Length: 312
Image 1 (cartoon, helix red, strand yellow):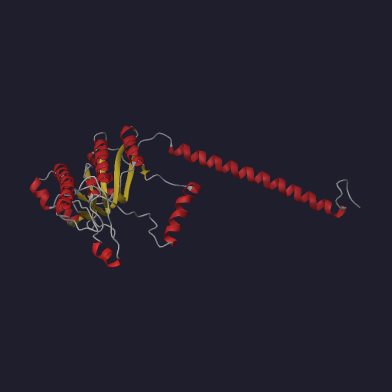
Image 2: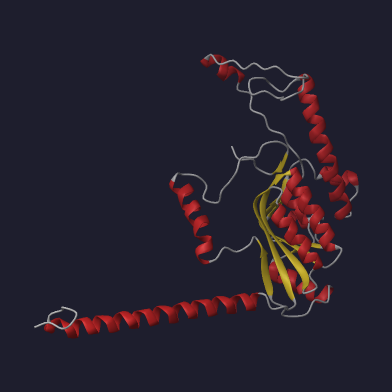
């Protein structure tokens, strides 16, 4: 016996239950989707509700120029809800241009609102250049600070290339074009031109350290031989202002800069990557680690750098 649809009679109850279950699952799906949308909208509204806060800008890893970071710093200066900025630093330095960009942007920000720099493990070279733009620098007793200096690295592989029978040649418009070459040592006019480049950048670095740390130029030069210091030594040599971390920086902002107590702290850089939008970054890090590369995306720097320890 069959019904009008042609199904056997004993299957009719089962088919009816299946249809009801499908309808139930559809309803549950749309309810869950509605909940997700409402939660997302709630989070968006919460994070975009105007309220006074302290902004945290994190400078981690190797420093290079970054238009997105620069735009965020400019926006912080213009945002009346941002009452102060904490620059959290954990970096060996980076390119001289990247350090200069941060120094100039934070100096402009400092003219509008209080800025405190907090060095955790490491704040050296271009990272220290970044820190001195703040109104006050905090570091742990055993943080690594300093390494005031500039370098240009070059590998002379001439003997190796001669051994394996490889020779480089080129046609150039002048004796310094595309120099130094990988198969030549740094000598003569080429070395002098690069030394001039390093010296010019170094002179500017020394000038801003002397100005911002209220040191004489001779005293600054004595500390600018590339040495690194612990936070405690840096405090003695006036390269930082106080021993401490973020809590000490907040206390200083409240007592010395009249920032409201218990203001929320919001991390504004680097930008967060939540949910599915961060999946590609997570997969990319996993792929790099699987290949034996640095999962943080470490890069090789080319050109003039202010870096405590360049990657080998």
